[in-house]
Length: 495
Image (cartoon, rainbow, N blue to C red):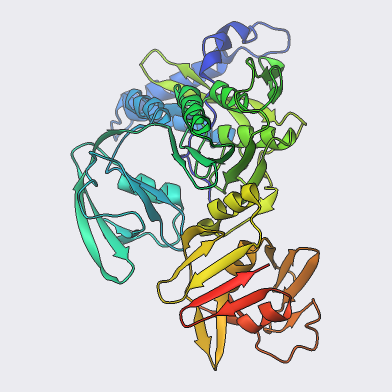
């Protein structure tokens, strides 16, 4: 998995001052005085500055020395933040950034526009939710991570960015926008059907817990007794804000996260108030870009069985950073501790495993909604004409089209089975696809044959692979016990 410094690790600002008081004295027995080594570095820089034929600037030499020290740590989360970068870093936690005002999510090969920020450069520009971003300044973004695309769109205030946009049924087109400073809340919410609320946390900034509690109160005040908490693409943020958000759902005094650092030793961070929504139906959405504080919240809720975690394995960032102010107005973001969940699970490098794996981004919210509402019958409706679908009443975009080959209808395999509550895994050992759910297990083999659920002697259609995706014959769903109804443009699947 591609890792990037764009995403913000947990920022442990509350300990930035304490760090110096807790740091062991250099004169401790067995501890080498760094001034001796620093003196050598200083001497080398002075000789180069005074005598090297290239006449390098002192700033260049100092910056090179800093980069060399940080590189020696082999730690992607420890970094030097010059004054301007520190300003951008702290602002981004609270939703302040320079960009064009579009919110994106992962959606197949290209990011999809989820929302337009009112009053932003994108507002009224012609970009709409559902559009795909194909290029940024002429560069195709296929295969780039969401973080990389976002970073390309952002830039300096007043500069221009050219976006190539694709909309279903419309030829791709270009829109040029001028970047400006934008502030958006770190929390957004909405009311769904069936007394269900939706809350998304974009990052854990200094006001996030207050915004979250307000949204939670508003939703429960209008009758919501089930909540979808969306932590997808959340890079993290402030540790104490993650603790406060978790505290809305677990008992007062409950451990949310345990840390162990060189300066502080072992610590536990616990909730400090009565839960505002203990016992409420809760599903938490995560994906591979859910990191740091987002993983702390999801991990604690999973440990206490206060929520069902839905989506993908998370990023796997299990360290804590302290932001230490420097005399030049910048800061050192230094890794000072490792953390684990209340039950002692370390997530660094491995991530948090969801309770219900759903790898299709378009399905994750709808599956969470279905888990909370337990509909009967459980129903997926596919509109072959519009390319849309509905899972138990929640509408979504079909990520891949329905195909018809040789008189057989083929449906996107992963999409259909994940929609119907099955787990779908590709097995690297033999190139097969394992499909498991409802006490049943099927295998789609690399030669296209299907086994399991009485299909060993199946003489019908085989799995079709087209444009890198696997498609399942509709007849297989009937054979494996699903109820399937079909008219001219609609396929309905029930269990």
